[in-house]
Image 1: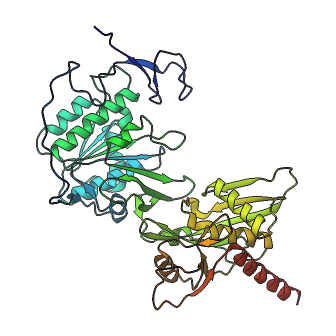
Image 2 (image 1 turned 90 degrees about the vertical axis):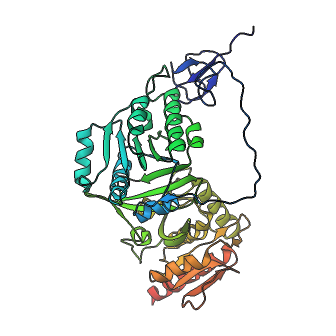
Image 3 (image 1 turned 90 degrees about the horizontal axis):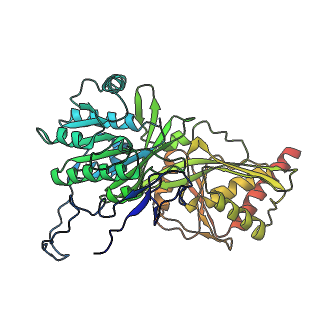
Length: 466
């Protein structure tokens, strides 16, 4: 009889080793490797003895498609991020930094759903019942019929929510505090997290209740625990923000029932989270229109256009290696823009420090911001302010050409709505709005943009000399 194989799994990062070691090669932590039976865990049944399987019914791809029923929360920003509301029978994982407002968001959503007549169960594994009640009173949710429990044992939680009428929404805060009798390890380890999430998802699929799981994040910003948890759930949302700013962004990373590029914008106040229906006004607040190095970028987040200010500072340096500091954008893409400016436009930045910041703590991820970044850099180097009523968007290639981007019409409509009457955009852009009154300047290459900014700088100096 063949000898049963065993695996050694790190309880911190989930790396599988063939033998025990004191230090994990994956994360570098000590004394975190534990021996586990490979027959248990994901894909295993309640017993270790293999049994004969039963055949399942095979069907074709064609047939009727039933749209997944949703539970709208009434919070427009939350419904936007989830694709229209929570889907019945789905599992949603929400991650975010400690203290960013995850529990506040879910308490407000639970109260809103309870007022609509839904049965909501809130299970807290980190706070006592009295602490959760204090938050509910501060948020104005104490008068709702949200059912509350403070428990961490998986079997006790399942036994509690299985009694009586089926809940419409179950909130587990958080998955790192869950522990099960079937796993011999401490709460928060890979085995316990995986086992707890498996049990919760199984209950959601069998009963049709929506399961919302709160997850901690690591210092790198990723949800702690095994990455297999993100594959098991139906949707993964990240609640982002900077404690130095009041705004919070709920970003969709994975969604089996909706788009994955939507965001919901909230503003933190003493009475909880307030929805921000027009985030462009939030990111454009307190603009200094006469300051060099500031350009307004017309971006897109899913189906929502967002206008945000990009700030650049180019200053001479006395160091042998100039400094490049970036906040809110990709540092590698900044290096590419600097190389294109020097190679094709003759803009020498090798003896200057470059500082780049996206106002409001917002983070830009789309390449359409290339032209706005380049405009801000040239404006700061030339010492002349860009037009206050102009927006910029366009992707810059390594050859210096400006490439077209999608959703041109929506970007221009949002800019016009906020009082911007001019735009620098790629040439041959499609989807231009009909009947708009804006002044559009089409740019074919980055040298063309630099020459226009430099020409306005020379005219500005002539006026100053006169």
